[in-house]
Image (cartoon, rainbow, N blue to C red; front, side, top):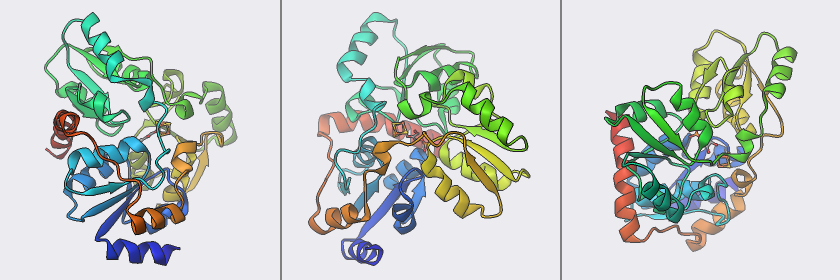
Length: 299
Ligand code: 13P
Ligand code: SF4
């Protein structure tokens, strides 16, 4: 199946992108694995004609926002992100009427229609820089309340937040972290900013998924407790075979990130199935918010 996918990728002049949470066999065949920021930058820069996106819907949608001339395929159309579904454009418009005018910083884990109503996007890798780059004293952040609360601790701005959350990261409790720390007293605890404030308080480092992989390589420590979705253990162990990684909780599995199989990728490429396309009026506005973020990150 791996050979079939690689040969179809060549035949269709396609590039395969995979998020760090994808199943190992998907990551091992992909041209690039990364966090949301790395994947959206790669999608905006590739000269491939087709992008097969192994991740969840908002990631493929972001690629399509950036490259409308390319065919963007999501091999399983029901791979979504429950957090992205926690804010709709209607609800955001209602909120914007209730509060004074202020920039809207939208996490990439959101729909194109919500991005279209936003000032700038952010990811877990650049959120603090993005928010602090804005001139306004008050900012609305959607949809992740945990990411917003984390940001509030690192900025002088007043942060208004939305009541969205990632069910996988929000399920991690301080109690589970303390248990893991007790079991592995020498390990460094890295957490994703989608975790609750009381969990982040216990973290030695708060990082994006790729930030964690990079940090493990740079750190002198040999053992790490990983506070994010368990799929990341594969690229972590592959990149740093000399180090030991413990999941903080084996329950931290994102079902949506496990929906795509190699068979799905092959079928999608062979029949050009699962194209993700954004209506032009939404795409143009959403692109402004995503481009501002990418330009900020590349500056
Ligand atoms: P990263 O951008 O850190 O890879 O996170 C994406 C995500 O969906 C986290 O749950
Ligand atoms: Fe969405 Fe959470 Fe899954 Fe990431 S881990 S895709 S935020 S549900």
